[in-house]
Each structure stands twice: as C-alpha cells, then as structure tokens.
Image 1 (spheres, helix red, strand yellow):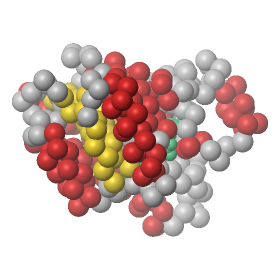
Image 2 (cartoon, helix red, strand yellow):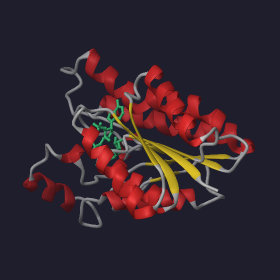
Image 3 (cartoon, helix red, strand yellow):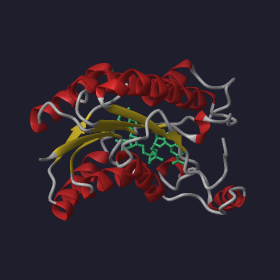
Length: 246
Ligand code: NDP
C-alpha cells in the first residue's frame, strides 16, 4: 500500500535532501515551494525522484505563511493521494539576520509567519488526515530554538515556538497514533548560508567541535531515523556537530 508524505519548502537545501529521502523511503512525495525561481527546480526534483524510486510526486506552489495557501496545499495532496497522510515535514523557513533595533515590523512578522505560524496552519489542516493510523510530523527548528543568536531575535523566537508546538502536539496526539518530533539543525551548508564568505565559513567551522559545517544529508538522515523510530515522540534531535549540547 502506498504512503504519502507532504514536505513544505521541499525544493531547495535541506528540504531538497528530505524530499529525495522520502522518495527513497517509498513515500509518494508532495513537494511544496514558493519562489518563481524554484518552480523548475521542484519539477526537475519531482521527476528525478519518480525515476529513481518509482514513487509518485506532486509539486504544489504555496506560501505556507498563509492559511489559505496551506488549505490549497493539503487539498491538492488529498485530492491526488487520498485522505490518509502518513508524514508531514514542516521545513520551510527564512531568516533576516538583522539587528533588532533596525528590523522592520514587516520583516520580523514574515519570519514568525513563515517559521512558526506555517507549522500551526499545516498541523491544523493535516492532522485530520493523520490521526488513528501510525503517522508522524517532523518540525524543523534550529539551534536558534535552543540558544540565543545575535541578530536572530525573530528567528530564535519562531524556532523556540516550534519546540513548544512540537511537545504540546506530541502529548495531545500520542493517543491518536501521531508522533510529533523536531529537528534542530546546527549550521548546515545550504542557500541559507550563501551570504557567508569562505573565510567566515572556515571560522564558523573552527568553532564547531566536529570541525565542519553540516551537510543536508545529516538532516535528511535524522528525518529518516525519526520516521523509523516508533517509540520516539515529543523529542528534539539536534544534529549540530557538538556546537550546542542541551
Ligand atoms: P534554504 O533557504 O536553502 O531553503 C528554504 C526552503 O524554504 C526553500 O525550499 C523555500 O522555497 C522554502 N520556503 C521559504 N519560505 C516559504 C514559504 N513562505 N512557503 C513555502 N516555502 C517556503 O534553507 P535551508 O534548507 O537551509 O533551511 C531549511 C530549514 O532548516 C528552515 O526551516 C531553516 O530555518 C532550518 N535551518 C537551517 C539551518 C542552516 O544552517 N541551513 C540551520 C538551522 C535550521 P523556495 O525554494 O520556493 O524559495
């Protein structure tokens, strides 16, 4: 019997690796993206996953910071794959990297809406299709959800909120066969770090006990572990090279 996974922000970076891993694990994958420039990237990714792993895919453009877009995303998924969703990966995220006194209300609201509100929207809309059969939600937080980071007040607020949401939903839905966990990545090489030059990257890597910036596969591998771990719920796993040891 085929199983279905939805991933928000499945086009690039960590989400791209997760989309591929979900296909490799045998899920039909609903890949969400938002930017014009990611349409072709997402369609090529979907084609590649279908060819490599023999699963079906659906590419859906939706701005997950908007409830109505999330509704359309979940409807498209259930219209195509039926009313049982097995995995939801809430991965979409943005960052401002701005001094708090200079940041605008619009900018910090966008970070909260994209990195936190989208998870409430997606969980609220998808859980009716996840309850009472073994299913699993994975929320992408960050080490910024575990510790303070300079110039990331909005991001840290959102990513801490993700952990509270994860624990509360894990408790509320444990009896309905839905596990809910979070991944809190450390520094991972993706477009999110594209503003950082090589010298700065070397300095960042030197401050990490394992001596390197992480790879997207470190996070997709963590996702695979969680999906295959039936006794794990309400947890935060932080692949971060030892940078943060909560
Ligand atoms: P990228 O910038 O490489 O990718 C971000 C992804 O999120 C893209 O797929 C993008 O879609 C999608 N996205 C952004 N806004 C929206 C939106 N409103 N609606 C739908 N999709 C959206 O980032 P990463 O891969 O690095 O980050 C993935 C997640 O991991 C984020 O939640 C991030 O906060 C978290 N993280 C990353 C770390 C890192 O060091 N890289 C560290 C800790 C956490 P599109 O392609 O269409 O723009």
